[in-house]
Structure formats: C-alpha cells, structure tokens
Amino acid sequence: MSLMQILLISVFYGAFTASWLGAFTSIVFTQAFAFGWLIGLLMGDVATGALIGAQINAMYLGMTYYGGTLPADTAIACAICIPLAISSGLDIGSCLIIAVPCAALGSIIAPIVQTINTSVWTPYVDKACEESNTMKIKLGAGLFPFLTNLIIKGGVCFICLYLGDQFVAGLIANMPAWLQTSFTVMGNLLPALGFATYIRVIGTTKTLPFFIFGFFLMKILDLPIIGLAVIAFTFAYMILYSDKQLMGGEQ
Image (tube, rainbow, N blue to C red; front, top):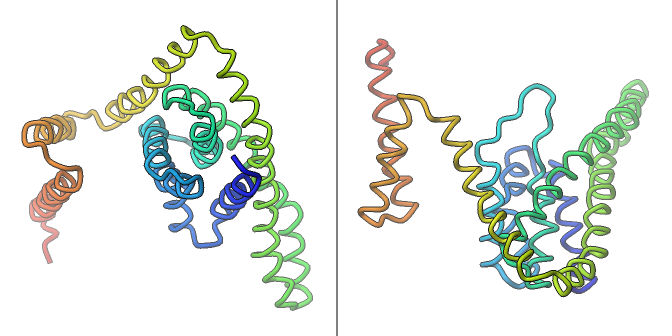
C-alpha cells in the first residue's frame, strides 16, 4: 500500500464523516457498503471493497443505540480493514475480526471531535454573532468544524494504516495455520450474528412471516435482490394502503 493511497483514504474518511455534504448524503456515504466500494476503488479492487463493506454492514445490521450511546463507526472499520485486507492478502473472516475494534475506535474519536466543536467553535460563532461578522460565522459553523473532523479522524486513520500495514503483514507471516483458520471461522460468524440480531428486532408475529416468505421466495425462484426489493415494496404499500382504509384515513 502506497503512502498516497493511505493519504487519500484518510482524507476520504475525514471528509465524508464531517456532514459537509448534508446529513442524508453523509449518512449514505458512511454506510459500510457504500464506503467499502469507495475504498475498494481507491485500492484498485472494487469487488473486494464492496464485499467486505457488505459483510461489515451485516455485522451491525440489527444494532440499536439508545439515548446518548454512540453507534459503532463502520466507516473507519472499512477505511482500515479493507486496505489492509487487499494489501496484505488477509481473508475476509480475519478482516472482520479486525473490524470490530476499529469500529469501536471510531466511537471513541467521535466525542473528541464533538467536544472540540462545541467548546471551541460554538463560542467562536456566538462571539461572531455579537459582532455581526458573517464571515466568522460561516468559518466557525462550517469550515473550522470540518477541518477539525478531517484532521482528527483522518489523522487517526492515517496512523492506523501507516503502522498497521507492516504490522498485519508481519503478523500473518508468523501466524500458525490453526490460528488463521480460527480467525477465519470466527469472522465468518459475525455477519450471521448481525442477521440474527436484526431478526430478533423485527421478529414480531406480524412481521416475521414476511421475512420467512421473502427468504423462501428468493431461494425457490432464484430472485435477485432488486426483484425481491420491488416485491417487498409492493407488499408494504398494499398493507399501508389497507391500514389507511380501515382507519378511515383515505382522502
């Protein structure tokens, strides 16, 4: 992995997690599957990037975060694990094992960035409002928080990739075969655990039959995921429309 690739990946991670493109766009781009595709593009292996990103996404599929609990940062998990997997030849199972602490690391970094933004740049903007200084308001509300996120999050990602590339390569070279197999097996179980958690969340008597029906429909008819999504949307619309009629909500 070249220094330029490490720098580009770090900048991408720091930039796309700063919400400068708007909340919706940033949420979409920082999802593990979409971000994994971008990292794979930078590393020259889009298929592996998208595949690992989808597996990381599946791991956290059913996770629900309440109150002030910060969600796992799947974007930094992709930013660190995918380049290491592609450059070091790490298998997907072992890569997913590394993704868990990386996602937790992102949850630790986020409060640091938020604290700096609220304790430094918010008073800066308040003072600019008192002075009616439009330029300072724009800088304190936009550019400075963006640069804070870019420097801190991008810097952590850069350090992890720069030091981790050689570390992982040496670790794999000296790791016994049985330990590599153990990591692969444990890593492959993690997406299944994510699906199990998700089924537990939606597993009510009203919704679970639709999940079972969709699963067997896809297996029996060999439907692609897009076709299944269209059928699911049609069912959802029909049920919503029927519920509105029953409740007298038809316009």
